[in-house]
Length: 144
Length: 151
Image (cartoon, rainbow over all chains, first blue to last red; front, top):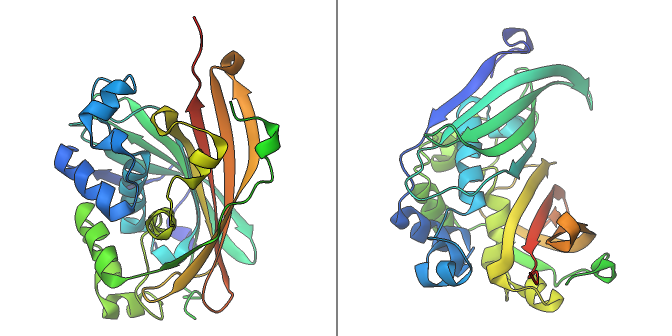
């Protein structure tokens, strides 16, 4: 994002569509994330737990949303990132991540924007409902 | 069932190193192509002193380097098959870079019964510091336990 004057409440600044979630994705994410809960990769375990099949890690879906977010907001500008996991994300889901500016405000000596974030599957069902606070402006203040 | 006595309980602190190979595996899994995470020059141009990590990666680091990733569930007597993730938040205070060594200190901050005891929501907060003692982030998660209900 550039200068704070560039965006206003109501602007949709985040929009990204992801390829379908496959069993392979879940297996890779199991290893890559350290979340080895078998419910996401072992269909026998998932069925014994009362689910029809394995399903996506919530944090895999949040990682997609985070990716969509930092495609447009430099990671050095991200102050908070929060989501609620609304419903289980099934195999084959094609996720669409979106973010809209809801508020511009000043906090901790910098101009900031609050974004409302959603992730939906290709049937339009809400998977994640979240928000983020991002810093506006050009100054690079996060190096150390 | 988990009750209020769990509130305030802390778990073994986790020390995790941000390793480039493991991070690359995560980036590849997610199809993450943003050069800021993959290219040192791009990261420097974005104001970082090193290569940063994606916004949810803190959650992974804590799970990857803990001795027993499900210690909390076994300690509290929770069956892994009955656990769902309810909410997750990150508050970022300072950059986390490849090569950092982070310490996570998780603790239970709330226990709430829902739907007449059919579900228990457990709130866990975690302070994250780096090798220089810098407080880099706070994370919070809500774990949903689907309780066995006798019908």
